[in-house]
Amino acid sequence: MAKFTVEVELDWLDEEMTLDDEIKRQIISGIQSRLTKKLEEKMEQQLSSVITEKVDSIADEFITKIMKDNIASIKIPIKKSSWGSEIEYMSLSEYVGNKFENAMKEKTLDQYGKATSYNGDKKYSIVEYLTQGYIAKELNSKVSDMIRDAKEKAEQSLIKNLEENLQQQLHADMLKRLNIPQLLQNLQNTIEYEGGSQG
Image 1 (cartoon, rainbow, N blue to C red):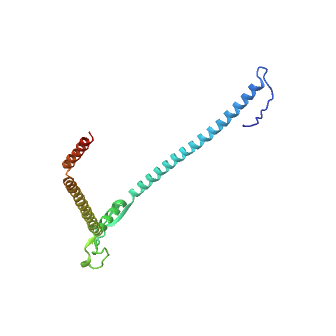
Image 2 (spheres, helix red, strand yellow):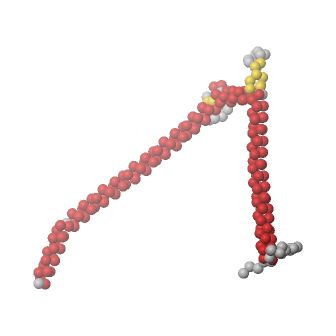
Image 3 (cartoon, one colour):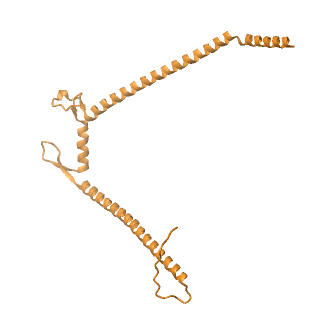
């Protein structure tokens, strides 16, 4: 059983209103104000999170645009030849792309993947070294996996066939030794004999 106390301030009562009506009105009013307050708080939280997301999104877009525009507009002076003094300007992204491409193509590694200082030892570019080592390793592992799987399947198939053949031969041998038709004939004769001796 629940017990609670309700405190109601009654300054005046309408003549048409009873004390019960005023209590109901006060309770409903209190509940409505609490619900309204909770709804307002919830709406404020939701609005705050939506506003924060939008502000973050706008800030990210702004920063990305500024960085993209600024980086794209940066030009680097590059000498056209090592002996000449003529300079051309190249965008930063193009410059980085060219340097990366040259680094990937230049043969600087030996067969063990170590950087070499002698031209005779240089055999591989970074890409060639990584791919040849990776491809060889992958192929070896794939081929050894295929061989192992084929061996296991062949062994399983052989064992299964042997078991089936042995079972078939055992069944045939057992049926031959039991001589079922003769057994049935003997059983029938025994039943007829016993039936005849009792009658």
